[in-house]
Image (cartoon, rainbow, N blue to C red; front, side, top):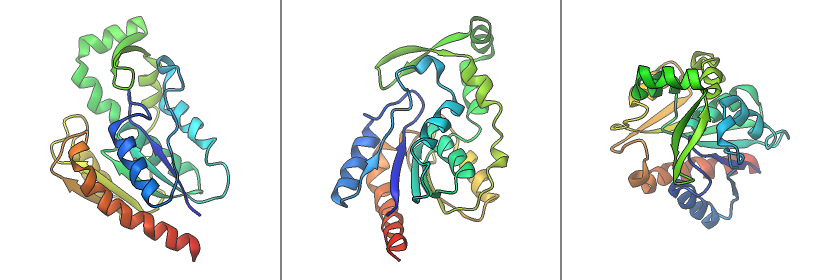
Length: 217
């Protein structure tokens, strides 16, 4: 049977509104949704590499896995799928493709320079409800990943808001345009996608049920 793992977004937690909503829906289907805490109690040392290694510890067996990732968790899921054959299906919510290129300009050149010099920058953490310091290694690590190398052809369903103010929908459009195995669903929503969760679930549920049929077959 396919296992399901949800990867929360950057500066979020397993207690987000999306997690609570999806866990309730999975419960109704009699399925378990694993939600690891990607903060690991140490947000300061968070990196994309650390998240990848953490989740790889959960998918080491040959058992098929569907990864559901939100924002930076979606980017993490895409890299996990590239490297791990056990990942057979991706469902991505506003995936953070080209994250650094979109995020750093919003901070401003002066802020980024100060962060680089001081090595730490306070980022508002939605899970903690307060700013938490983050090492500049987060940036240097993320810059070592080139999204063009994400080329493993597995079924990928992407939901993205047309009014996304963090990761523009153009990022998912460009990603899907170069990969025939990607289906992009555009929504009248923003980066959070909270108001679109019922609509997202209706489409996601179809894919999940197909997972189960495929596993039984």
